[in-house]
Image (cartoon, rainbow, N blue to C red; front, side, top):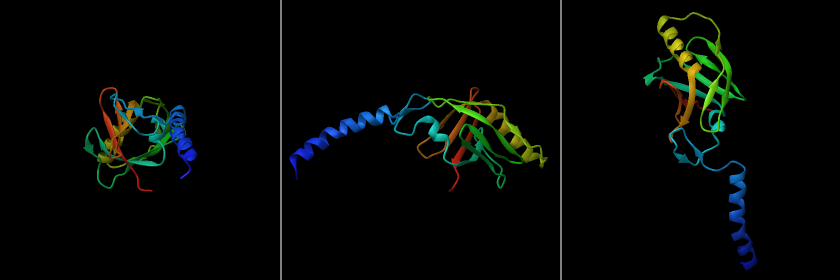
Amino acid sequence: MDKGFVQRAGLAAPVVAALLMAAGCAPAEGPAGTSASRPAPAAVLGGGQWDVTALNGTAVLPKVPINITFEDGRVYGAGSCNRFMGNYKSGETFTIEMSPIASTMMACPDPQMQQETTFLSILGDVTSYAVDSAGMLTLKTSDGRTITAKRAPA
């Protein structure tokens, strides 16, 4: 093997690492101050639909889907009964700010309506988020209420 190539390749690794760090590919810091190699905070939310699995640690009603999509500063989805939409802004430290959430106004059976009311109340107050090593998204309010979701199958 050409020794000049090996020497040039050996110099390339630090240069590539410096370029990646400058481009924002450095490890991101989560809300708890832990460091992990993962995409920049805003990129975590996008990329498709999230299916909600729990509200405040309680499983959502079976066969009553709640889902959320974050796309280009817009948040939208299904909240048990109705469609909802709004805007969001994500910070570089896993913070998030929601605009007022609007929804359609169809009536549904009481358990579904209660679940949707809880969901929309939490969603409108979300201030931070995290994705754990299993890929579960947790949206959290400043008073500790949570929405837990998993990435929907493609």
